[in-house]
Length: 326
Image (cartoon, rainbow, N blue to C red; front, side, top):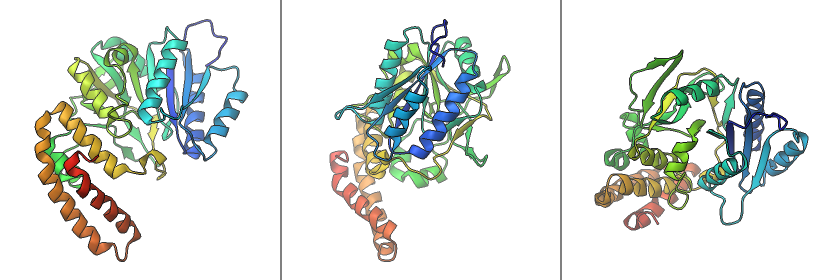
């Protein structure tokens, strides 16, 4: 983290910030402490997407108070402020500013690191296993409970059934390989490892072209990236760790305001890209599911304001499903 280090930067952490100041403070603080004690030179780049909750002011103050460290703050332009834009812009800045960096750490405001050990293990594993594009970690909440780290590539069936039913039937569960043990590092592979956090090999990032911000600005952008990497021959790894937290403390991102519609639009787009254009045949089944959901929510909406809001969104999906949810 120290600017005066004579060794070139090896790892650059990329953080997206948007209206989650309390989480941002915790995440940035823990990451900074972990990197200060690490055995490798590092830097942090934060992409500020236009927060109005004090996050921007906090980051400006942080930059002033940590002027001796490799900390870069990028403010979003009006036309490039999505989650995927932030990751792409941050990674491009990392490679341009620190041309010898080998590792890009995609780190979110609901993450915390208790020490640098997971990152050191991740770098060691990626150096050893040339087929790995990236490595994530088993994560937990602040209360110690296990939290999901990834999933298998989604299918048409899981999409038609809906998120809740598909989850109950375990259709999204990671297709984990057997555990491997390499130099004391316990790890396995699965289709998709979420960017929370994710240590990415620079070569894989450059070969893949990064996230597809045009088609997947928010939802499913990590799934699309993992799928494209798989088609290029790369794999994703999960490292067993007790030192990584993924917990939003029930504070949803402001990027999630249209979560339901965005999910359906992007999941449909994802399946068309990677499962084939015949995914368009799912529309009648999706329409029937939305009809059923609308009927159930209509009965509950009279006494439940939350159900009333969900009902409005289901009606919107009924209107847009035939046009790819657009």
